[in-house]
Image (cartoon, rainbow over all chains, first blue to last red):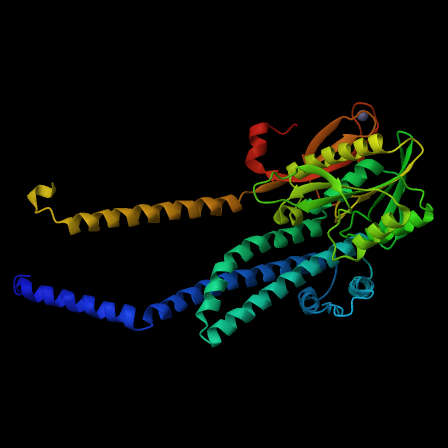
Length: 366
Length: 102
Ligand SMILES: [Zn+2]
């Protein structure tokens, strides 16, 4: 400071400013730095996603080794990549829903048979739990691999827009996918998840009465409620399966020769952000969130026989639907049950036949 | 102000910006920590068993093998069937406040 007079300092500072100005506005250095930052952020989030896939694989492997399977890690990784479904041709819409249903069904059957071959000495429920857990791990793995693909493409072609998008969307994906890892815990231990609210309402109606397997993995119980004969349909519990509620309703309606006064479906539904979890609402239609084949069976059966369709939904977020059931949803099941009773009381007469379908995954619910 | 230094407007501007940056940094750090701790809340799994006969119910901890609809014993009041009627999770702190019974 003492050696140089003020004029030199001024010159040095303005030179620094000039250099910085040039670098900032005349080169693409800022963008390079940003690419570097975005790609590092994306890479760290991707690593977290990869560890989630690993965690889910090791959880299932742990469960398999507890069931007495050798080489569990290898078996789980073999299941991760297989079993994709190719969408049916949709430029020819004739019977597209039938073809889609057929593909989904045969894929599920193949998957289940392979799991059964793998675990010959394990009961159906434990086997269903393994199958559901494997399906989750496989879905997580698919998401991870897709995002990794975009990350590598972004790095390869220096596409900073892609890397920026990835680094912005990845935190949201991580938060949305972390419940899936927790869901594996639920499936492995047999704890009901949020989506099990439909089967839980069905259980409240049916109690411990006999379950008759009407179609694969789907049971129906016959109970008397205030003079009405109520047929309660749900997936076969307490293993993790969603069953085939649509086919079950179609078969039941056929068996009853259209002598049905009402079909009531109970299901979990996605709430909007800001809505309360566990809100029970009533509407019209088939409350069931499958890709289409099951829902259309219920609608067709209802239209063919002119049966009114009531829908009772319990609102929750997608996270809450897949995580172990929280208290709000368990209590909402009571309200949904009372609403179903009210519908039966007010809109049917004694002597009527009523079908109530508890749609959802019946893990941990008999 | 500032011990008689010439009141340079750029000095004030620089100080104001610095303060703003520090405040913003602290705020974002705090909000990040809050959302992080929210995710890590420890949960407990509770089971409600109810008597099918008299409606007597009690809450216990979950053990593996329990499912809704499983008969777990007989009612201490009337001897009817005790079955699991609910299984749900809740944050552990919440139950300390409200107590184990419900
Ligand atoms: Zn009792």
